[in-house]
Amino acid sequence: MMAIYYFAVLFVFDALVFAGGLRFLWKSKDFRFLPLLLWICVRSISEFITYVYRTEADFSYSTISHVSVFIEALLIIHFYRKFKTKKQKSYFLYFVPLLLFVLETQFLSSIEKPNQLGNLGYTVISILLFLDLILMKDKSTPLLSKLSNVLFSYHCITFPYLIFIGYIRTNTDLMETVYPAFFALIVLLNSILFYLFWTSAAGFTIQPFSRLWKNEQMGKRTITKHEQTT
Image 1 (cartoon, rainbow, N blue to C red):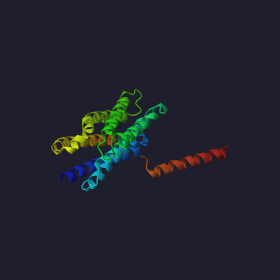
Image 2 (cartoon, rainbow, N blue to C red):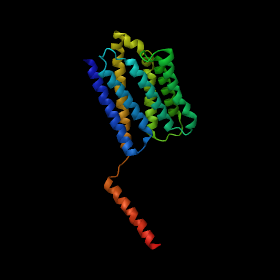
Image 3 (cartoon, helix red, strand yellow):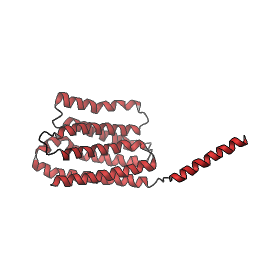
Image 4 (cartoon, rainbow, N blue to C red):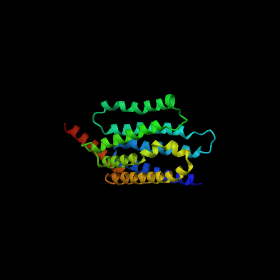
């Protein structure tokens, strides 16, 4: 019964973050933050699939986790590259999670077993990339600095949980003790992300369509008058 409450709360907070992010994108037109919203979506979808099929006999949480972590790593890398000036030198980053995914699922282990290597690679990549964004001198937007600090702290805190998640999930007593703390951390993260997106969007104004149309017509009349005088 507790599972439905956990999922409902996570879904609501994920939806709030996504709504706040869409509001920010709509008002700022800064689509460099889109990969971060997609990262939230992937996490939410994996949670939804896990909840729906959790009682199926042939359902494997590890399979969902492998794919989800792989996509999340790619999105974090893509988000990072949006703010780097020397993008050509960072193309190799995309191959790191791909290499780890192939190695773990095809050679070192199986896609139906816990993705310890994938979690390790994803967490280390996220920590290093967000740290680099924090140390980046040319801050193109205050929101980037705040998000980088929050996500860097989140991944540092969850590092032990993600590394030992395979063992934790097989130990019922340990899972009942650890997961509520992890759940509370995710809720806190989503609350902060929602606040940052929503308040950052407040600094932008959207012109109504009627005003945009009026400005466009005025611009056309100005061009026509100029052509007549010439």
